[in-house]
Image (cartoon, rainbow, N blue to C red; front, top):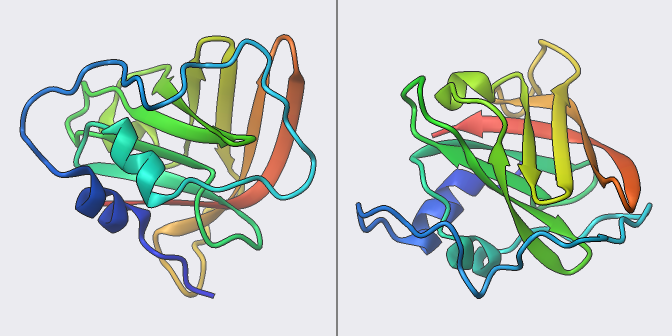
Length: 163
């Protein structure tokens, strides 16, 4: 099964103004103090979530849970090595902004990454160096999402990076 390239979708809905975007958008939820992380299929980010978030960057990665069509987490950055990624993760019905914990542009995210937004943390670990047979930019991966107040959850899926 082929996944929609979220980067194309995000580019179409976000609109590129070329101007820096504000750090916060009142339409996108601030990090929750105590997210409730469920063990079943997680809700996915949609075009509206991505448009409201106005993530900066021209390249990025997305984590999609196994068996789902849309991503749970999207991170975008500039390709230069000093850039830090902005991200968005869906927890329950809320889209929560994240920021990568280190600079490095796309290179820093290809093999996974760590992100934080308030008390919420998310870590993507790529599990194999062998790409998906249907998509050479997609790799098996594991996402751990959690907070100090709600615990954490591990989700199996795919990590797809590109422009």
